[in-house]
Length: 240
Ligand code: URA
Image 1: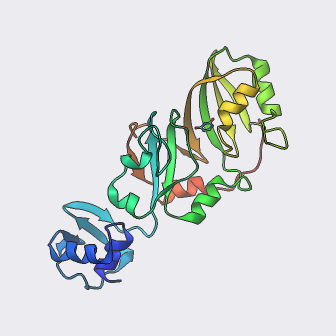
Image 2: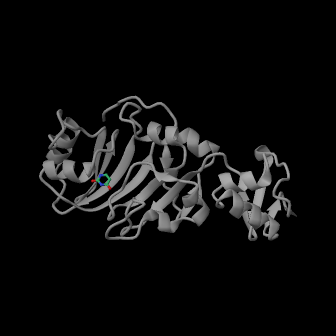
Image 3: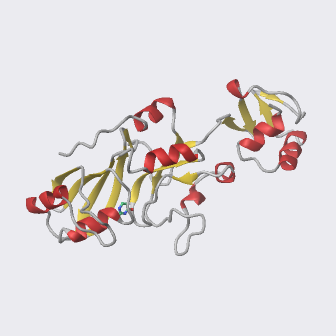
């Protein structure tokens, strides 16, 4: 692959812009400055450096973001900034999308990728990738409410009752809920249907990938091979 093309795939702009970047002397290949945009590079072992910043070549981008409250999961946010404002420009330019949406006031684990098939696998109800949420409720969490959420509640426009895969209390006002799908406002609607309401919602994990404790709100990181394996496991529809 030619160097300018490698840069283009990583989100550094148009063909012309990438050629100009290289000619301007802002790009290094595996630690060596390079001003020839047409030089052949091996994507399998390519570490680019652009304006002094390291950019290992990645065929696809897989990211974990610790979403803070007050950000919308949209490229055209209406009332709050979009989560894409928290990412470096090349990642946005290469077209990363949210893997399912979190509400603007929900915090926690948000995955992003430019791999459409990966996104589909993560959000498809058929795959049943579990998502674990911690919900703080306005009213005390009664044991009967947990039973109701496990048994399934009726939601408007849903033909069948929607049930949590697992539901346990964390403290008197907080519960942990595991869902296999990601319907619109699902946690808030389920808890409302069970007679309570959510005052704060946080996503803790997706599949076997847990939001890293050292990933501060507003920060992101690349997902590595072992992280992707944690996400790509096959999940049985087990209820607890
Ligand atoms: N369920 C909700 O109600 N909101 C979210 O942000 C995610 C799941």
